[in-house]
View 1 (spheres, rainbow, N blue to C red):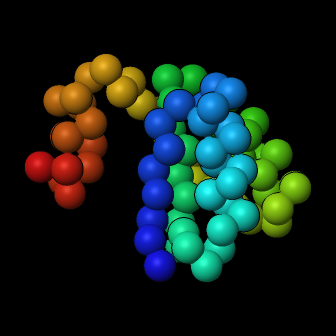
View 2: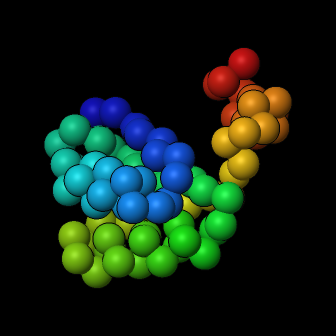
Length: 76
């Protein structure tokens, strides 16, 4: 199984997060990240209620590539 990171908790990101959360045989872990952690947490609660699956959330500025690389050593 694979892990997936979805950056963006707007309309498209929300749809992708819902679909990824439903694919339990494909994705062992789903993480949703966006500039506004509140948006991520709201979607995560909705996904848990609708699909019974917990997803991880994080606040991140995707325009700051250096920050992303420092945050996750696997991206180096």
